[in-house]
Image (cartoon, rainbow, N blue to C red; front, side):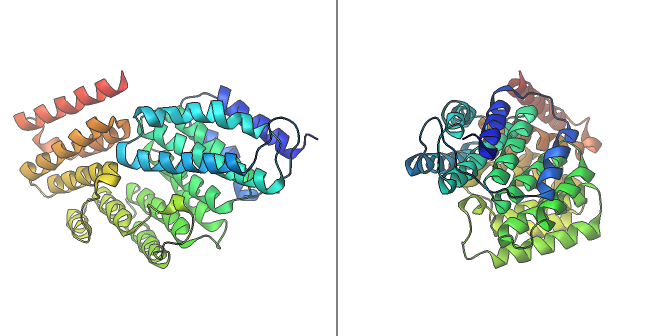
Amino acid sequence: MPGRQSRHGREIREWFLYSSWAFAVSAFATPVTRWLVDPVEKTQARSGGLAVGRGHITELQEAADAARVWDSRYGGAGWKSKSLSEYLYERVAPLLKGSYSEPVGRDLFRVTAELARLAGWTAFDAGQQHAAQRHFIQALRLARAGGDAELGSYVLSTMAMQALMCGFTSEAIDMAQGAFQRDRRLEPRVAGFAKLIEARAHARAKDLAAASSCLAHAERLQERGADGGGPAWIGFFTQSRIITDAAEVFRDLENPRATFAWHTMGGMPGSEFIRSRAVRLSVLASAHAQNGDLGQSLHMGRQSLEIFTRLGSVRGMDYLQVYSRSLARWRREPQVRNFMADVGTARRALTT
């Protein structure tokens, strides 16, 4: 008989197919509040429609794992990333209307939440903020319906990052704090990621003490979870990720010396995290500019531009826009004017 899960399935399918808006941080308010009040719901069996079994769950999990690897290596603008939304609409949404036992239903909603978060993340990277927001809200609702508070926390931290990158610093702080505080039994790296995003938001707000405290907390939590346990989707949260984000924290705090110190603690991200490599290069380019070294700054800035252009990352262009502000004192220099023109050309090519 149709029950709570049937209603969830119907609502989620409608979100997949019909929701559309430009990014508005206020759209996060209701789903976030509901999750904070009650991050898990009891999953119920459902009858009627296609019979969903373990084979379907395995397929969806393999799709999520493959999409995660592809996004890290090639970014969110590639054809395979774009096909993820179609996969959700055409393959996954009908399963939500099917028949399943309570355990299968729980895993169905969890893995669909992973896929929706990944679809949001790839859209975010491609500059499709409205689509990203829609998918993140879907993912939070799905994690809640699947009774997975840890996955919900991770989704909420990702939503906080989108809010931060769109300029809503205080809202990002609130969401990151909620992701951390709602359930203190979180796997250490899940909690650590929430603290890392909070650190970045405090840095944008120029709050050195709060940013430093959250960064230190994130580092301790990452070390606690370094044994490799926990869900696969948090496997990216390594010391290398801490270093990349810490460098960005101190870039935003206009402390190039600290940015360079963090950078020397670990090598550049490799080809499996090529977008993170481009982010690190743009941050170092800013730090060199803050330090008065235009030549080294432009050298790294051009490397970053090449990678972001190859990946088709509109979010990368946002990083280069932040970097460009550090070049203001040299704006009349021919090499700076040429670089800015190249950035503008690359952005137009990606957004038209």
